[in-house]
Image 1 (spheres, rainbow, N blue to C red):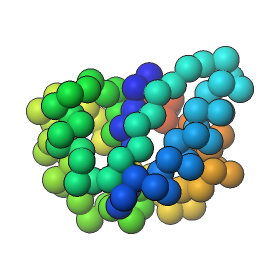
Image 2 (cartoon, rainbow, N blue to C red):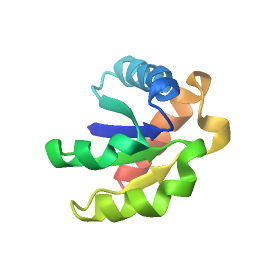
Image 3 (cartoon, rainbow, N blue to C red):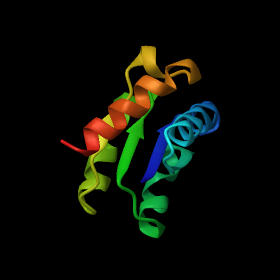
Length: 103
């Protein structure tokens, strides 16, 4: 599973990305998550294929812009709820990611 995680600057999302990767490892699975700021999404989508784009709560105002970019490659966009945007919520968020991709 290859995921792009976009937040305002890519810093806070790197902490969450590590927690989600740890949760996947605990379940015997492997996941790749690239945390970046929204200003880099368009460039990153040109270079890499993703299964999903996660959006941090603080950048939901850019959801339409990101969805338009993602639609060119048929990549779904999943907003993260505010209460789940922390490392302690990684188990729940990882389950939601898997459910979202398997629907």
